[in-house]
Length: 85
Image (cartoon, rainbow, N blue to C red; front, top):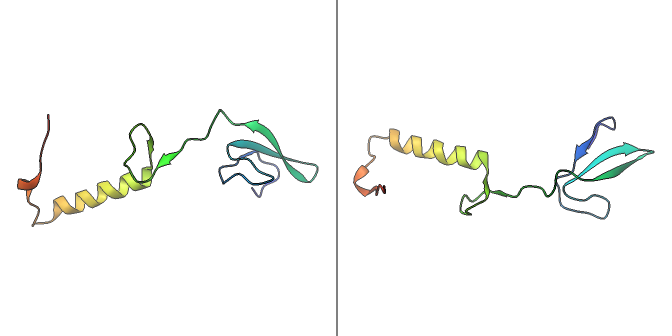
């Protein structure tokens, strides 16, 4: 939080002066909490293993790119793929 003319939502770990998920504005030389910003912050699943959790977009993209690279190789064997309907 560097621009003292802006409002920020703090997403780091809670400290003695900042609370995760609160929004802050700068006033009288310090960051002042305006309270919780639209409820609780969303927890993102970077392992792509938790159901009913938001998936990390970068991790998902990386996995899709890896799959695309695998499909594009000449040695790709579909015989080991199980397709469920």
